[in-house]
Length: 142
Image (cartoon, rainbow, N blue to C red; front, side):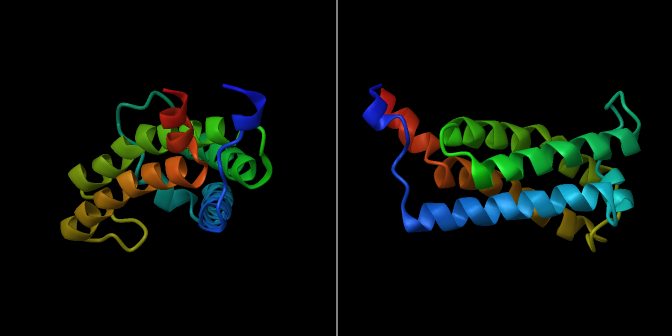
């Protein structure tokens, strides 16, 4: 790939989506560390070897880092998009655990609400890939 094509084409829509996703991640990460710690602990699957609190704190730091990178990084935008998509995929078992274990958190107090939430995780993956141009950049590279 030439230097000219090193950065994916950014449109106003992609930029707005990326900034929004980055802002959401920074907010969510901050809430992991502060006011929503208990709610996030309800999503930690039993198989995670760390304590639920340590897992929530670590994932909060990762979310703040990813959100900040989405907001600030131009040079590594597509890489950050792939990392964010991978992160959203990696935390999906937490959403499943919340459903399977019938854990109430974030107003998700029925199995139906918890199941509907599962639909939105793939949306986050696609959002990260589209807003950063990561998917477009990969297709262009082929």
